[in-house]
Length: 133
View 1 (spheres, rainbow, N blue to C red):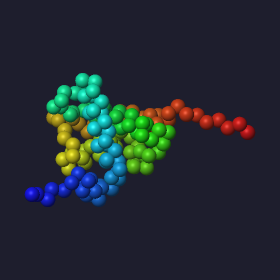
View 2 (tube, helix red, strand yellow):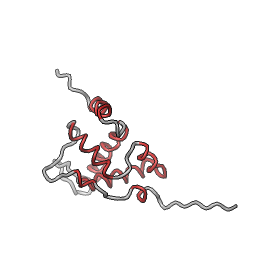
View 3 (cartoon, rainbow, N blue to C red):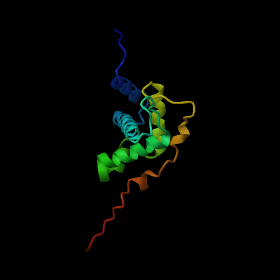
View 4 (cartoon, rainbow, N blue to C red):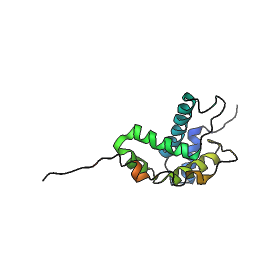
């Protein structure tokens, strides 16, 4: 029996080495990956043996899941985790690949995450407030 570190231990070690993003941010990205893989398999967009999604698809899954989970607070939650642009998701994915919690294909590039959408606009949610005085 080997003493391989668990995924949680790997993430905790990663957070100690690179303090830009907290454990919760990495956990969120991994959950978003599972979410988009499940949704794409349901739609027949992924085969049973394929789990690959693009940087754009993962970035969009993070947006959709954040809105679903946190509603109007989605932008604030991601900002508190230092996720301020989709490039940050790419940085986290690079780190997750480096510790073997994600894999990449020959065609994947970190630039695939650059400017997928504007976070401020994505989480504005169309709310406007007026005050009658």
